[in-house]
Image 1 (cartoon, rainbow, N blue to C red):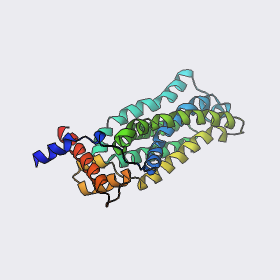
Image 2 (spheres, rainbow, N blue to C red):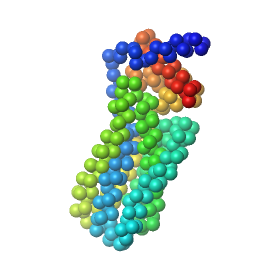
Image 3 (cartoon, rainbow, N blue to C red):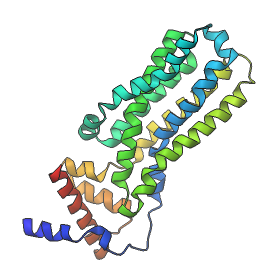
Length: 259
């Protein structure tokens, strides 16, 4: 069996000519998972303008520049702390469910931020949002790389960064538009949008597949093959395509053994 495995591994999937069919669904999966990056970008682009809005000061009261700096940057602290659990959670419960957990935390934190008027509670809400970002953001990149074909790993792996940039731009425009609104809705609106994105991300994750590599780690090789076949758009009657998938799974198995 060892000889057979080594023979399979010796033929790298990169050396096999690419098939002339593309599963565009993988781009939709990657785009949806990358909403974790959008959540991060929306916060980066909106939190500064929010704290400078007179409507925000009128609602929560005046506070010092030091307090403002702590409030704005606190998300990074809690995101960094929660990211230490990423590896364990992603291996134990899957990349998919770890991103889902992050989306739930982010949505809950944004809902709290959009509905309270007390600065200490806003700190707590921001901490919860930061935990969600820490859990979801880095795990998303791992998930995208693991579901992508070798020729598209760079493209799909960078999609999260693209969504961060889009989120920053969208947040600036949202804050620019909402500052003209009267009352606290002016600063609550950006948080409401973040909550909506978090909810959409959480709901959609129930419909995306597990990472084939994670399935292999758990010994669920049949599910891994079926998932990989769907991701690569290979029909079970396509003998050459199934051979390519077998070789790809063999590489994944070997990488897991080395790890």
